[in-house]
Image (cartoon, rainbow over all chains, first blue to last red; front, side, top):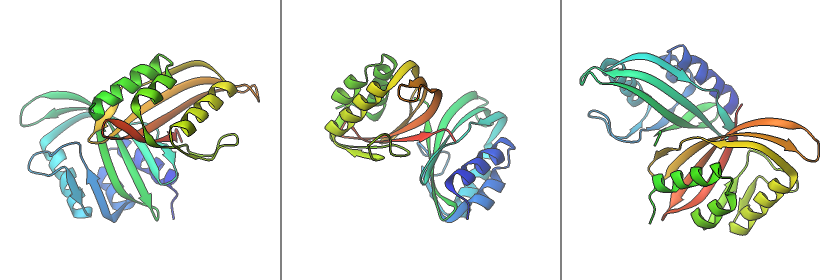
Length: 122
Length: 122
């Protein structure tokens, strides 16, 4: 079973390769709860389960052109880790290009991510 | 009553002035729970209450020489905010100089910080 630190480092590695699907498939537990700062598109702020999280990723990739995306080294203690993301992206619908920075806070149980929560830079 | 974002910005401002006591006095609730990654000195990882948190700060300041300390812009959603700290410090007991990076995760209730948890960079 992977430790919190092992899960954290693997998630950062996969995100920096752009392999978000691999991160969900390999590191997320079936009871995952994913919480955004606010509702996006037709989706509520909170999503439950692997299919829901895969659906959110699909929506994101279909509606955004990602120019670059960087995940920081993880910060880890006990069952929790945090990663900073810096993303340069264009919203395909509005054409608006944005530089987004956010922190993801992750909870790990039995070697799997069971909760992720995203906080945008204020 | 201050919003989570207002509390977060004030905390960052006070930390960047080195006014940690002011942050505790002005922004922390009496039921504060403060969680370090591990026990430090004679103190357990978890500290409860304002006096406990002031005692931890006093111990920290007495046992460390802080060369520089920087708090990032806060990341905020709902009742939660996160701040990255980069600290250049010498442990007065060992003489060891260290560059520490950690993320603090804060929970706000009724305009006051009720929980802080620190995650060191892995």
